[in-house]
Every structure is written in C-alpha cells, then in structure tokens.
Image (cartoon, rainbow, N blue to C red; front, side, top):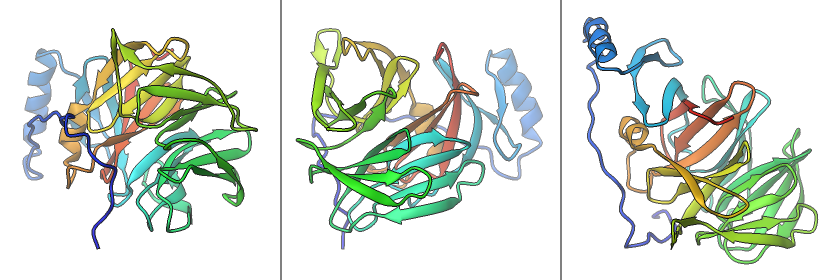
Length: 286
C-alpha cells in the first residue's frame, strides 16, 4: 500500500544541485584537499565520528554530523536537555520520540492512533503538544514520561508548531502564522508572512530562535527567518548543500526539522527520511 503525502503544490520547485563525495579508500586525498580548500577560503570541519568533512553555506557552517533514522518522516523537532524530541508523520507510522543526539538512537517512542497523520511539536513547561495534519486534533503529553494526558482542537490544518515560551505558534500550509493560547487554544492573533510584498505559503516546520520564527518552506531548501511581530522575512538560509549531502531517497524526503540548543548556540537540521542530522553554527543567532 502506498504512502499518503500532502499534495504537492505544482507551482513549487525543488531546487536541485550537484555534488560528489570522496571514495572511502581515498583518505590520502583529504590533507591535500583540506589545504586547497583552506586556500580557497573554505573551512575544514569534522563530523561526529571524527572524519574530515567540508561544508558551509552563506551565513552558516556545519560543525558536526550525527546519524538520523532514515525511516523517520520528520515533522517536528526540538532540543530538550541533551536529547532531541522528534515528531514523525504518515498514517500508521506517526510517533513522538526521544532521540540520543550522538547516535540517532530512539530512546523512547509513543505511537499516535493509526488514523492520524502526525505533524509539528512544541513544549511549554511540562507539556509537549503535537499537531495532526487534517484532523483538527492535537495531543498533549507529559514531557518526562511521554504519557498522553489530553487532547485539544484547532481550526484548519496543522503543519508546524513552535513556542516563544508563552504561546504556541502554528503554521497551516498558508502564509499565516497563528498564535494560540496554550491553555484554551484560542487564537490570540495572526500574521501574514511576506517576502517584500509577496505572501510566502507552504510554511512548514517551525522553531523559535532568539526572538525570530524560523520556518521550513515545504518542497524548498530554504529556511526563513521571520519577524513574529510583522511577519516580514528578515533573513534566509539556503540548505541546498545539506540536502545534496544527505542524498534523500525520494522527492518526498524534503528538508524538515529545526531545533535550537541555546547553550551551545547550535542549530540542528534534518529532513524527512534523511540519514543525517546536521549541527550548524549560524551567524548572528544571538
């Protein structure tokens, strides 16, 4: 039986790029390549296993790489006390899970009922909130035990979820960001996300980072940095080099997953069905 996915916007295009990797046996090339890249202004980095790697983009550098479950259809992600909390999607496969960062090992996982398609996640206090796609129903879990304690309702579709610590910030596939009361789930306000004069639709997974809302744009390699007050796009990060390296297996395996570690000032990035979790140092996140 085939998997069900969100309908792709036919006007959206997945930016492509090309890249290559060194063969495993060509380790002797690394010192030479490193010297040449350093002369060209690139930074030689090392991944979590100690292997020499090179990768950077405008405004960020990859400082580490860790394994990520290649079967995880990532819908939501946030950093939590030295672990990552991840929400996954697809009907019959949707979960909430606690993940060991360095190994990608799933420490704890709870499945949501099979008729629901899991979406974005966020935590306030001792509660974790998880959206579903088209059901208008969300689940609340105890942050420590993962026990499901409550359910909540919201209008429209659920895509991404984040929090500034006071309200829940929800995306629904449109250009709107909606700010919900975490106790009553009433909508306090909304903003339209715009790049210049143009609305930006397909806002997906969200993260709140130092006063900004960061958003994946579905079927794009872009992460937008958005003013929560005005909806204005105040910055963009192109993750094409990461997607190229991740080598996703299908066109559905798009960029989707942003988590922030405020102590280290690191941003964790992955995608649906990606085998790699990237750790970024981003200019001016503070």
